[in-house]
Structures are given as structure tokens and as C-alpha cells.
Length: 288
Length: 283
Image (cartoon, rainbow over all chains, first blue to last red; front, side, top):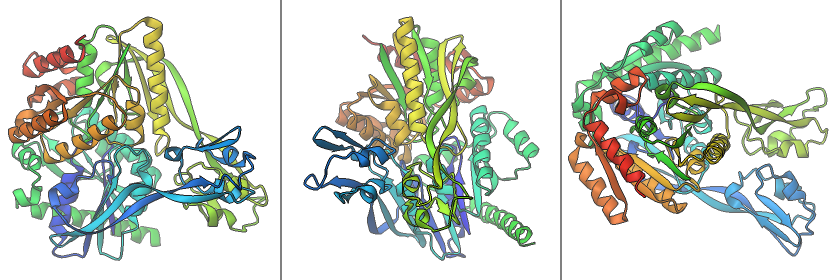
């Protein structure tokens, strides 16, 4: 089962939920945690994995063989990202704009374009106290997170449970991360910001046809409009975490909730049981 | 005209609450919400929308079923796995157009994609440019560029001194689009280990693009050891820490009431943000 953790709004507690859920389940399941927030990966801060391997993430970018090139301009014409320009006798490539689609090299009539790899990030893996851990890191200064996320997701294997931590927002990196998961846990907070961004996240998840449920974090401040919305939209609130300075302080020191407050272990096991119930019911109804 | 963009790396550190307050403190400015896929600034500024515009960007492949002979070349060549069973997955399609060029039957065309809306609004604090990216859409960076361009245009036309932008979290494409060419990046950091990690990365991005940065530590009293670590790090890097804002539930209460915190409470939070604006607006 693949469980993604997303939120719309940033800083609502995705990392807190992902790391504690993984720790609560690791003794009884073969489990992998993947950090798909490749712009700002934080799971490693809490789980302190022993990194045992890594691989670079490349985008194949064009390299022009000037001797073969006839300046016909076909490559510039087919590039949708303005990553190639033909100026008089010169062909300029702007590799940071290139998405690596391969159109230019395939369509060059002179076969004057080959591809070379440009590194935009890295995927690392290792063991975090019994959890198979994988994370992606976008290189600072690079713009495109999705290729790094795609490569992180290739590490989803035959484990019982894969938990994948998503970046905030609702655009392409989020879609890339949560697509294909069996369940998406949406972490939010009971404020107008939390609600506004939860609504957007729910629309995204529904568009992708993924079942979802909510974790309400920092309950006790704010208002009750998130709960009202969830009732109206028939979205289950699967776990409520109170606003508690002690929880915030543990978090600030990089200590997971289930380690800092072991009484939460059982609540996260219960959270998984509820997710499993929803996913199983859904797959039964799909079979019928 | 100076362009100030508020960033953080990590989400939820308080960017929008701070921008909302700067909106109330700065006299001559246009506001811009560059967090186009989870925009929240409007919830503090109660805008009335004066102009709504469609944002057309990028393209999507479209297969003409009648012409398609199911030869499979497009599926084989697409590097984004966006064509399955001779159908385009609009979410996976990157709009590169490769398939449309190689289809032997010319059965694939590229169609313009309406990927969001942008707005020019009036608020009691001044003009606001904001946007809404369509659900699960790409090209947030281009929409951010559009928001910034409109904000600059308004500032120039009306002779305003500042554009103040609420930026997105992360370090990728919409952040780079919010940051490039700005006069100052204000980084809102929180004193958590993950917050420090994320601050270092986003400062790496501002450094990479040559934009000067200053730091505000929010909820600094949550962990004073970590606050000192941020101060030490900034000192090493030659970056000013312009404010240390304490934790206060008044910030959340102000969000619930839909007003900038400086207009809701006059405690230490408000004084620190006033001091922060003093540093930013220092001649």
C-alpha cells in the first residue's frame, strides 16, 4: 500500500506525521519511507538515516555537433521551452530551460545533436533504525523538482507499506508525488489558511482519484471551519493532534512525536488501521 | 522602486502573516501574492477584485482517435510516460510537443492550456496582484512571473516605492521565479532543526541568483538554542537578522479574524514586525 502525506499549506505537520507513522508501523510491517519533498527534505532530520547509497538525477540536454549542424533551425522550432536558439552561424543551448524531452536530437535531420547528462539532484537511500529510507534532493539553484521526485518514486518496491512525504502546494511537484498512491493523508490546521489550502488539496486529490482523509494538527487554536468542511464533504478526520508547546519543542529539536511522547505510538497504529479499512473497502467496491 | 520578496524554504513559518503586516505598515507599495498554488494573502487583506484575467500557458497533446492507427511510436518516445493506451494523460503531459512532431499520421495536435487566473484587486492597504493556479496544473513559475510583472507595472504607473511579494515555500521553479531580479529577499525562519536546514538551502538559492537577503526569526522563543544557531550562521554568512518575533497565539487569532496581526494586537509581535519594516525600508 502506498500512503502519501500532503497538505496544500506548508508547515502543517506533514513531516511530523510521516515520520511518526513510519516509526509506529516499522516493527510489524516491511516499510519504506520516501521523502518526496525534494526542495526541502526534512524527514532525515528526524530519522537520522545511515545513507548507504546514492545516485545522481540527470536531465539529458542537447549537445550540438557544430561540424555536422547546417543551422537549419529545426531544433529551435521544435523546442517547446526555448532552450535552443539559432543565431546566424551559432546554435545556442540554454540547458537550464531544457526539460529533456529528446525532441531536438531525434528530429535533427543531420543527426548533429547528441544528449549529455546534466545533474539536477540526487537520490539517496539507507536504513533508519529498521525503516528503508529514500530521499531526493534538488540541487540548490535548480528549478525542476518533478524529475527528482520521479526518480525517488522508482524506489517504491515490494514492501508492505510505502509512505511518501509530499512537498506543500497543489501544483506539479505535488501531483508527481501523490499520483499512484492508494491513500493520501492531508495534514492541515484549524485556521482560515489551513482551510483554504485544504480545499485546494482535496480538489487535487479528487482529480487524481485518490482516497483521502485528514489529520488535524494544532487543534485548539483557530476556528472549527475545517471540521465543518470535512463533515460537509464527507472527508474523515482520522487523527487530531492538539496545539501543545511540548510537541512543538520536540519538533524543534528534531525529535519525532512517537519517540518524544510514546503514548502516540498507539494513535498512529490506529491511524493506519483506519486508512487500511478505507483502502480495503474501496478496493472491494472497485472489484464489484 | 524596490522589490521585496518574502521567502522561507520551509512552509508555514509565517510568511503570509508577516507580509500582511508589512502591507499595513508600508505606505507606498503594491502587494503581490506569488504563492500561486496555495495563495493565502487575500485572506488577510479582504481584496475587492477589479480585474480578472485568464492565464493561458503551456500546451497539452491531443490525439485524434480517427486518425490514430495505434502504431505506438508516441508512447515509445514520450519520456514523461504521458501516453498510455493511445490516450494522453493530461497530468503527466509536459507539453513538449515531441509526439505531435513524430506522429506519422499527424494525428496529434498541441492545444493551449488554460492553467489559471490572475487578479488585480484593491485593498485598504493598496493594490494587490494575486493568482490562482488551476488544480494540478504546471507552469506555476510562469504565473508567478506574470504576477510580478503586473505588480511592477502598477508600481511604476502609480509611482509607488515598493512591491512586496509573498513567496511560495521550497526552492524550485516558483521560488526562483519570485526571487530573480528582486532587490531584497526576506527569509522567515523558525528555530527548528528542519527550519535551519531549509533556511540554509533557500539562502543558497538567493545567493546563487545574487539577491541580497535578510532574515527574520519567527517564534524565536520556541527554541532559543536553535535561534542562536541561526544567528551564528547568519553572522558567518554576513546576513543580518532583522527581527526576532516571539511565539504568540495572537498571530493565529488575527488570521482567524482575517486581519494583519499588527492591526489586531499591539504586543511584542507587532513591535518586532514594525522594527523589521524599519530595517527593510532603511535608506
